[in-house]
Image (cartoon, rainbow, N blue to C red; front, side, top):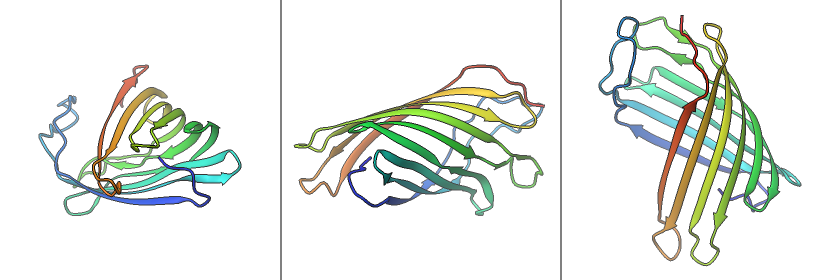
Length: 183
């Protein structure tokens, strides 16, 4: 992430997500899904507000193959720059989801989240390594408050001298810190 400019950086992302592997589900209440086509749109806003105060925010629309809504994420965050490349952030997320076409299953989830993010960059090669640790408190009316820890690692390596083409490798692991029941 680059936050050296004095204006907000806005990146619009468009991704076609061809499938999601089947996940463990209670077959009595949910249909098994082997794969599912989705289209994802995302807007990411990151940059300085004033002094050491920054924003790290994003908005997503994830749709089924007919563009009907599956998931919406609205996730504003307010960050304090601790030092170059290091940020402590607090935020809120609203993540409504629709359980499937032809169903009336709607889930209205709210989250409070805190994160620590650190990016190390080599100025000569423009190789960047980023780590992000996020703790989320997830609130839904039908379950207890869920606590989840997320750990993301990301490496970006420019493939051309002008840095117009970059190889990016990342992964994020999710850890549920408590058990909740779905009604």
